[in-house]
Image (cartoon, rainbow, N blue to C red; front, side):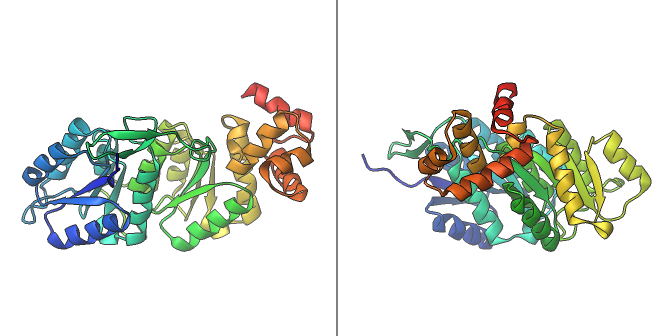
Length: 355
């Protein structure tokens, strides 16, 4: 039986946005349905299962308070729970992002004012690479709309954790990512509150590095009367997820710093003005050492080496199994020993008995 492409739906009252979003989805190999209102979207959602929905919050151009997009998300959640949704809007608040991601089950949340094709393309790739929300397997839609199951590959089922970097300044995001990569950590970087929440919900995060002010690119508007910065609000969600956090930010008040430690339970606060690379790297190691399973700190490749080490394989046997050089194995073992804070193979293997 021939398979057909996954379907996606764009729900936006602006025809220009329908075209832009539709092109991105078509380039990703999706068959695209388009609707300009809740009423137009409903029969399309009933007639076909969809893998992805891009939904505008306000579906009435003359009324910026219109939130029919949330109604669309609610319908998708009820009629097609295997469909992942991304909400787009020009009128975002932190509260709205949290509501869309938690109450309405959105995959992520983007602002139109700062829209970047590359950012949406990356999110689409993540959605298509993930299993449908209601299933623990991947598959392809058949012509009848059912899912043909295919097992997850070994790499796709990896449990390796990542470090989340939330920083709206591209330069600082690049610096932090490079330092973490140099120490062997897999990194997920983003610039805004909504995307960060989506990553926390859908990926295994072992540490978060967060800037307090996420308004450098206008990503978020602060509700009137609220003085807390967006990064500080994000830290509450990070704390609720049980993920340790390091704040790397500009100068802020003593009261704000006290709140970070007492209310948000951050591991450390580092000022950008006096940022020191080695101090940051050391703080990352200490934060990870103080939290959770030691093995969560290992990268995917390091975990593969470690698992073979735990089975009693020699360096040469590990190299032959993974098709890498003996020197590469030694380099991975050195990184593993440092992250696990051990000095011998036996001590490293003992960590697996404690996890």
